[in-house]
Image 1: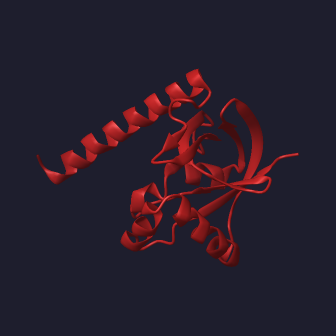
Image 2 (image 1 turned 30 degrees about the vertical axis):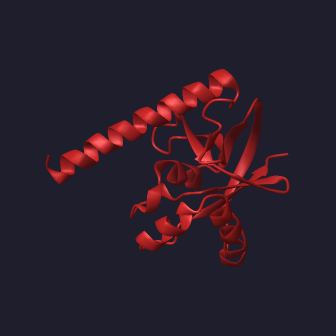
Length: 148
């Protein structure tokens, strides 16, 4: 199979798996689809920057006080995930953790804050270190803070 076709098939499979994860998470309040390799998963809903359509994506997260921290890793790919580009255009997001649904504001962590959080994130999910080593971009760390 040509390399480009492998990418398309991999992207379709990944998308299908994400849709299944979101469906299971919503149906079971996170009992199914609520963790990956022991790391907790939340559902992040952003607004499409071009369409305005709500987009929900399962994302690993780290609690940091009242804030929730997520990583725009995209598995170390050279481009940012679409959800990250969406929240850059519109930082108001909705997060579901278990049954709890809350409105939050997203911002990209500045360098010192990113460094502090990155160590904890790699402890939570070791593959983040590999993803960063594979990528030419600095993988964004996103802090989600309560809207109220």
